[in-house]
Length: 405
Ligand code: CUA
Image 1 (tube, rainbow, N blue to C red):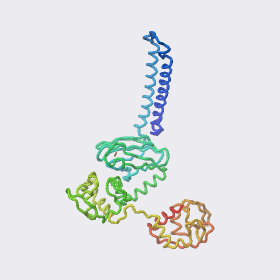
Image 2 (spheres, rainbow, N blue to C red):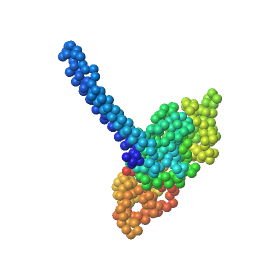
Image 3 (spheres, rainbow, N blue to C red):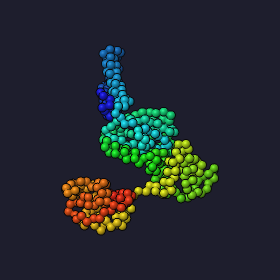
Image 4 (cartoon, rainbow, N blue to C red):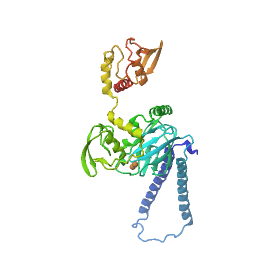
C-alpha cells in the first residue's frame, strides 16, 4: 500500500471499522454463548454437579492462537494507518500552524498569514504546528487529524481534503477561558481558486489591510468585530468609547484614543477594562512599530466590522439613477432587472458576436463601467458609462445586487 495514495480519513476509518467490527462480533458471540450456557447448565436441570475435564489441549491452543492472530492483525492494520499518518506525501503544501490563547494563525511558504486554513482540495497539506504560550491541540474531525501544539517544539501532521468545502477546526486541549472560542475553519477550494486566493492575499498582504493584521496577531480570537462580547471587549466602535479601566487597583474612566490602544497592546494589564479577565499576552517586542501604527490607524478610522453592505449599495443605486431603468422586483423595464441578476445566465452581444455568460462580479462591474461592451440581447444600448465610480462604490453596488437573489 502506498501510504500517500490514501487520505488520513481513510487510513483512520479503515482501522476503526476493522476493530469496531471485531468488537461487535466478540460482544454478540460472547453474550450469545453466555445466555446459552445459562439455560443449558441451569441448576434446575443439573441438581448434582458433575466432574468436568480439567485440561483440554486442543481447546487451550485454539483460544490462545486465534485471539493472538486477531490482536496481531489489529496491530498490523493499525500500524499501516500510523505509517500513513506519519509519512507526509512528497508533494505536500507546507503550512505553519501557530496556536496561541485563543486563536490560530496559518502561515504559507510565501509569508501570507491567515486565521482560517485555506487549502487546495485533493492536495496533501503538511502542517508544522507550534504554540506561543500553552498547550493547544490542532483538531479537524473531518480529516481525523489531532495533534498537540506545544510551546518550544514543532509537531507535525498532514491531511488531505477530498473535496472543496468548509470544515470545522477546533482546539482540543483545554487552554483557558477562551478555549471554547478557539474555533476556525478549514476552507478547501479547487486548486485554481486556491492559487488565485493566494496570489490575491500576497498582493494585499505586506503590512496593509488592517483586519488581516488583527487576524495575524490573533486579536480576533478574543475581540469581536461585530459588537458581541467575547473574552475581551469588542473592537466595534472602540475608538472614542468611554471605558472603565482598573489602573493599579483603582477604577477610572478613560476615553479610548491612539495612546490608550497602543498601551493596551503593549501592556494589556496596565489599564485593564473592568469586567474582563487579565489574560491578554503583551505584544511588546512581538509587533513591529509599523504594524502597531497601522492597527491604531485602523481603529481611528472607525471602520471596524463595517462592510460595503446592502444599504450603501442600495443608496448608490438610487443616487446614480440605476433604478430608473432597472427594477429590483423582477419586472422588465428599459434594462434587465437586478433581481436574481448575480449568477444568472445572460445572452449578450459582445464585439459583434452573441455569447452566453454567467453574470459574475466581473461582468457586473464591466457592465457598470462600460455598458456598451456587452449588451444584453433584447435591450437597447442606451445606458451611459459609469467609469468614474470608485472601487468602493462599485463593490457596494455589486454586493447589493448579490443580495437581490
Ligand atoms: Cu487552545 Cu484550547
